[in-house]
Every structure is written in C-alpha cells, then in structure tokens.
Amino acid sequence: MSKRNFILLIIIIILAIISVFGYFYFNPTTNTSEDGGIGTNFISQFNPFGRGTTKPPTNTNPTVNVSGYQPSTTEIKNIKLKKVSSVPIAGFTVFSKERLKEIPIPEPSPIPTPTQTNLPLSGEGVAPTSEQGLSLPETTNMGSVAKIGLKKPTKPTPPQTEFMPALRYVDRTTGNIYQTFADKIEERRFSTTIIPMIYEAFFGNKGNSVIMRYLKSDLKTIITFVGTLPKESLGADTTTDNEIKGVFLPENIRDMSLSSDANSVFYLFNSGDSAIGATLSLLTNKKVQVFDSPFTEWLSSFPNSKMITFTTKPSSGTPGYMYAMNPSNKNYNFNKILNGINGLTTLISPNGKLVLYSDNNLSLNIYHTDTKVSDVLGVKTLAEKCTWNKTGDTVYCGVPKSIANAQYPDSWYQGGVSFSDQIWKIDIKTGNTTIIADLSTISGGENIDSIKLALDNEENYLFFVNKKDSFLWELGLK
Image (cartoon, rainbow, N blue to C red; front, side):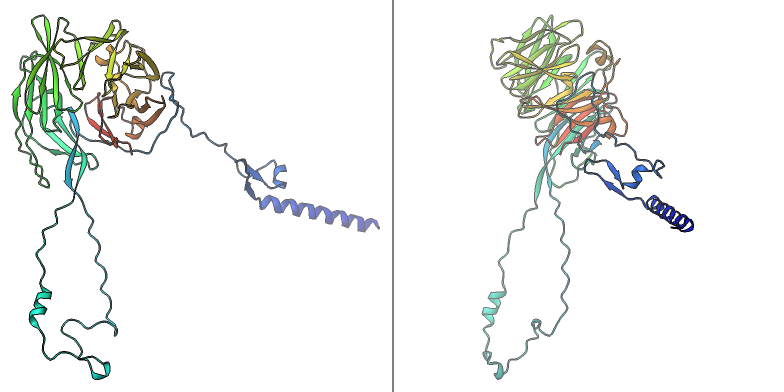
C-alpha cells in the first residue's frame, strides 16, 4: 500500500470514530433499570461530561419522634379536619339525630322522535279494514271502559329519613346553644337563653338536657343549672328563640360526671367537713345520695350504672389514688384500684374492666382490674387527653409531638405548658398504635392541644376541643 493510500485510510477511520461518538453524544437514551436506578447506553457511560444531573431518590417516610416514643405501626391518612364552632365553647355532645334524606331528582328521559311505526295516539285510532282481518263491535260498553279507567286512591308515601351524627354545644360567652350535623357543618343557633360566662357544660338524655356551670356575681360561688331543651319537629327549620327552662342544683358543686348512657349525672359537694355525692336522673329528675367521705378532693367518673370511680386530684409530687364503688350498694364499699402514683390521671373503660392512666412523666399505661396487672403502652400523654370507643378495646389520644421539661400535670393545668398534638389510635388487645393525623399539618399550621375527646357511635368522627382557645373541631376517620 502506498503512503498516500495509508494516510487516506487513517483519515477515514478517524472520521468514522468521530461520527460514532458524535451520534451517541447528541442522541443519548436512558432506560430505567430494574433495581430502580437510572441506566444509560453503553457509550454514554464513558462520557465524563453529562448534559444533566440525576438527583438521588428522597426518602418520603416521615420520622416520628415523640419524646423517645414511637408507634409500632404508623399510618397517616388523607382525612379531613374541620373547625366546627365559630365561638369558644364550654362543652358539647354527640348524638344521633333524624333528618329528611336528600334524594337526587332523576333527569327526565328524552322524548322519542315519532316514526311511522309508532302506535297511534289516543283518539287517533285508524279504522281497521277487512284486509287486516280485524273488526270492532258495533256497540261499546262505556261502563266497562269507565271502570277500567278508575284507580283506587293511594296513601301518600312518607318521606325517607336517616339518622346522622349531630352536635350540640354551648357558647362559652353567652350560654346560647348551637347545633349542626357532623357531615354538613351548618352552625345554627338553637336557643337564646343568656347565661354569661359558662365555665363548663354537659349534655344528656340524647342531647335533650343541658347542664351549665358558672360563677355567681361574687366570682366565688359555683352555680349549676340543669335545663330541658325543647323538642324539634322533623323537617322544620331550627328556631332561634327557644328558651331553656330548668332547675338549680346545690351551690358549690365541686365535681360532676355524666354516666356513659348520658341519662344520669353524679355530682359532689361539700357539707361541713365532708364530701357528699348524689346521682340525678335526667329522665325523672330523681336525686339519690350515694356517697359521703371526709376527704373532699375527688375527681369522679361514671362509666356505668354499677360503678362510680374516684381519683385524687393530681399533682406531680403527690402520690395519687383511685377507688371505685357501686352506687346501688348502700354500704358505700370503697375498693382501691390504683395507689401511690405521682401525678395520677385516669380514664376508665365503659365496662369498668380497664383503666387508662398516666403519671407525672406522662407515661400512658393500662391497668386490668381483673388480673391486677399494668401494661405500658409506650405513649406519652395525659389520660384525660384520650377517649374510649364504645366496645372498650380501642382508645384515641391527643399525643404531644414534643414535651418540655416541666412538672406534670401541674404545669399543663396552670397554662405554663401547651402542646401541639398528633392523634393516635391504640388497639388495647394487640398493643398496635397508629398515627391518625398530625393536627398542625392538616389544620394549616394551627397548633391544637386537644381535650374533651369524643367519638360518634360508628367511629366515623372524632371530636375535640382545642385547650388553647376552646374551639370545637371535627376529624373525619373514614
């Protein structure tokens, strides 16, 4: 081969190599590898100057850290949080209320276009011919025709109704009562009775009775008013001029608790140096004294008709005790349940077999009254920031995302410490815990310190009050 031809061959080879590299440089292809990474074509792997950058995958799993406690399983659902009340409230209730069911009106079907095959309209019959093989009688029995046209009168169909969770609550400032359905927040004023500065309110008898507690003008004497709400007519508009009529209980009632069926209330008041306890039926207004004690600092609970519990008022440096009694037993037998726990707060299950309690470290525990055994739940909060479901196998709690060093529960009661909560669901049988929602996230940044938690019967909604401002909130669970 001549020198000239050899040089030409070398030039052609160089041009070919440049062409190949140029093609892959300006036409890269990418493929997703099976292991989730990003793969490139073979040539581009040797190209040190990429035309773009690949970001490493980000970890979207949230890290939960609540003062060292973590749930065994976490699940943050896409659920809805709504502020129910437009005013600060003193108390609320959840009950089942009947309403007219909304039935969608079907769209009218289109009128068909007449064709030659349509049957003749009434009064436009075509006389048959002999060729059709049809014949009409010369006379018509008009009486039979008239009978055929008559219809027996039918009874009007009653409107369809449905029972839905509803709310009633008391305006803390005026004492007015408001109500709304849970699925459609349409706040309506139910009463105009003015009782200024209500500190605490309870509802009973399926929302038809209300108990309001406030201070007398001397700002020392505690007044307790028990009223009956007027009944509503189905389908009628809620009137705003309802007047609440009722009676007053003894002055300076120190503590009250509503029975689980909300038909009775237990209350404590001092008589001399002793504490007297009595029950009041909201159905019959019958009062019965069931308790007396030389010790006056009690917090009561009324889980069922055969049990009333008494817990000493909690303080961080003071051992707490819990007792129970049967109100139908006139011997007032006091049975000790828990003792010697500093900062003790309690919440007993509806059947009275389980006690949810917390201590001055906010450690949440379950005590089994039958086996006398306590289980640590691995959650840090106060027992009173929780609620039982109706079957007594699950609790829902407001759990602080962070907890400052302080004396608990004293600092929280006094307002020196406030929390920003997540809502946790705890299965007592399995011990599994689930994060339902981070309230500050789904509320748009508002920190909520949840108290007075309550569920509807079907566990579709969780309701609570924000301790910071006393507004009522609703969390959809399904």
